[in-house]
Image 1: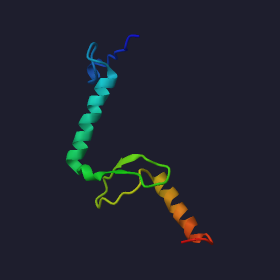
Image 2 (image 1 turned 30 degrees about the vertical axis):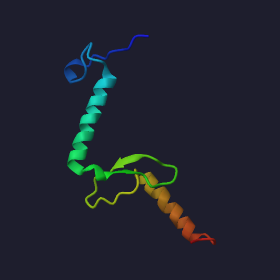
Image 3 (image 1 turned 180 degrees about the horizontal axis):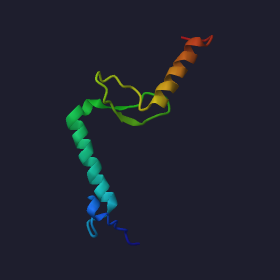
Image 4 (image 1 turned 180 degrees about the vertical axis):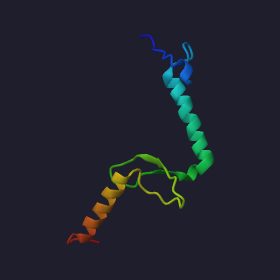
Length: 91
C-alpha cells in the first residue's frame, strides 16, 4: 500500500515528497504546543475533573483555577453537586 502525499503548495503546507500532511501537522502541533508552554507554563495543563471525562485542557484564565475542559463538563458537575445536596441521602 502506498502512502498518499498531499500537495498544499503555496499555502504553506507540505510539498510533494516531503513526507505528507500527517508529518506536517505533527510538526505544526508540536510548535504550537511549545509556544503555549513557553507563554503559559506547563502547570497550566490539566485533566478535566468531571466524571467520565478525561479530556486535557489548557488553562488560559488569569487566576489559573480552571477545573473542567468545557462549559458542558462544568454544567454537568454543577448539576450533579446540586442534586447530591438536594437528595434525602445528601452529604
